[in-house]
Image (cartoon, rainbow, N blue to C red; front, side, top):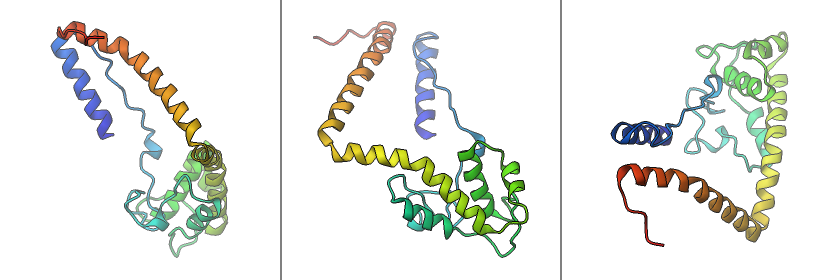
Length: 183
C-alpha cells in the first residue's frame, strides 16, 4: 500500500506540474474482504513474517507444515462457527481465508458449517490453502532448481519492462524538458 501511495503521489505531482497525462496515476486494487488476513496464533494481529512463525502461511512451506499450522490455529472455547471478528477473531479469520479461496461469501461458508466443529472447518481450510499454494510452490521450486533458466526469464522480463517504460520516460522527459541520455 505504501509503495502504491508513493507512486500515486509522484504521478499526481508530475501531472499537476507538467500537464494531465504525463504519468498514469495507478489505482489500487485491494479486495476489502481479504485486505487483512490475521495471524493464525494471534488473530488480533495482521499475518506478518515478523510475527510468530507458527502464525503465518509461507508459500514455499511443505504442505504438511501448512496443514499443521492451520490445524493448530487459535479459535475459542465456544464451538459454534459464525463470522464475528470481535468475539471470534480466530474463527472469523479461518472463514475469511476459506471464503476467499473458494470464491464464496463468508456468510455462506459459515452457514455450511452449522452444527459442525472447528476440526471440520480447519481441515477444509488447510486443504483449500494447500490446493491454492501447491502450484505456486511447485513452480517456485522448479525455478530455484534451475537458476540459469530463472536468470533468463528475469532478463526477458527486465527487457520487456524497459521497453514498456521507454514510452513513458520519453513523454516525461519531453514534458519536463530534459535532454534524452546520450546513446
